[in-house]
Image (cartoon, one colour):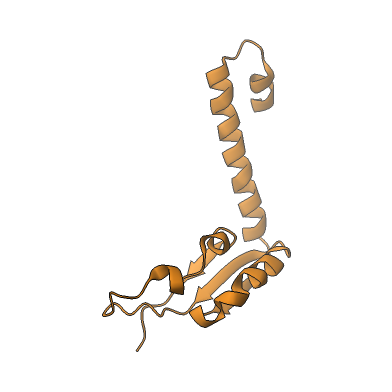
Length: 108
């Protein structure tokens, strides 16, 4: 039904764009659901000291096509305001590739 409406010359350009956005969003949910419903997933454990290896590890595990969870140790001491998040947390290009991020509370 959506494909026919998008292809219909009577449909306005604005409506076509809205419908295409809806279809694209629904498709991304289908991709997510395919991974989420598999009986296996990948759990990567990491900490700030291993940031140099994290991107390659995430990229290689992502190729498996399973749900990818990153369990990341929390070195963000709330008592220290001088710590920069950019030096401790995974970089944004890594964060965009994982499905779930788990960070515990700060431990001393």
